Image: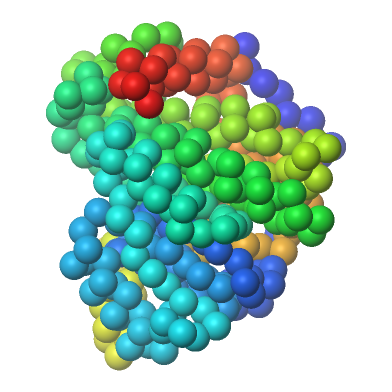
Amino acid sequence: MSKIRDASTKPTAHTTFDPEKDLVDLKGKVIIVTGGNKGIGLATIRHLLKAKAGKVYLAARDEGRAKAAIELLNDEGLGKEGSDSEVFWHKLDLADPAKTKISAEEFVERESRLDVVINNAGGWLSHEIGKEGVNTQHLVNYIGPYIFTKTLLPLLKKTAQEPDSDVRIVNLSSKVHYQVPAGVQFKTIEDFNVLYSYRPVPSLVRYGNAKLAVILWSRKLQEELLPSESLPNGITVIALHPGVIDTVSAGVPKPFRALVKFLVRNLLGFDDTDFGSQTSVFAAASKQVKDEREKYQAGWGAYLHDAPVPGSVVDPSPAALDDQLKEDLVETTEKLLENLGL
């Protein structure tokens, strides 16, 4: 049965969003963005640094690519070490659950606070079953972020105990989750590995299946992180679709970026990564989410979209609002982690 959200609690519809003007004060805030070395992740970090976020961690597996991205930002005058808004690399390999947990544990040792986690890393991957018995699509897009966030929760909760806290967890999903056919299940670990070979593009549906899991998990996580005596403002959890994105322009040197954006948008019909990152930035740092926190926490953060304006509230698929499917997913995920000794 699907959960029906109370329309009276729906956030105010906004007609514009300016990432230069419509953000909360990020001074002194600590933010981590996974997959931040390119594409939407890099563009998201760029916006956060422009807004003077205290520390932004670029979490990625490849040190060389991460440091190249940081150098690109530094060349733009953003995130320089020793400034009031810095960017650092943090090693993270979401394809390996054990390494993912270690990465999060190391971050907890590294920092005394954490205000925002943006689980941006992921992708449309080939179907390969890893040693964990789960395909890489689910490992990278859902299970890795699940482990990473779960391990970071004590630090997030510590930060959320502050009187004026505004702690957020942002999980990137995709509108491809609508492609998952009716009858999807998450009752067993094998359900993560359904091939969908009868569909025209099986890999697309497998990707959508993993992104459906992200929305369901986000809903469950929000239920567990509502305001309480120990968490005065709770922790706001938001899942979103960023758009059909060009992943090239964010990594192009600044003098040429405007031209590349124009070509990508007008000739190919894709959003550039700057626009594509705006729904992530809205979810992570907009004033509206803070001002209407209770509404987003009341289920309306379950799925934001890039249209008609970044951060728009839309309905996910019926499966994404299925409470039994949500409970089955989390129970099966926890069983997998137990099997892996995590």
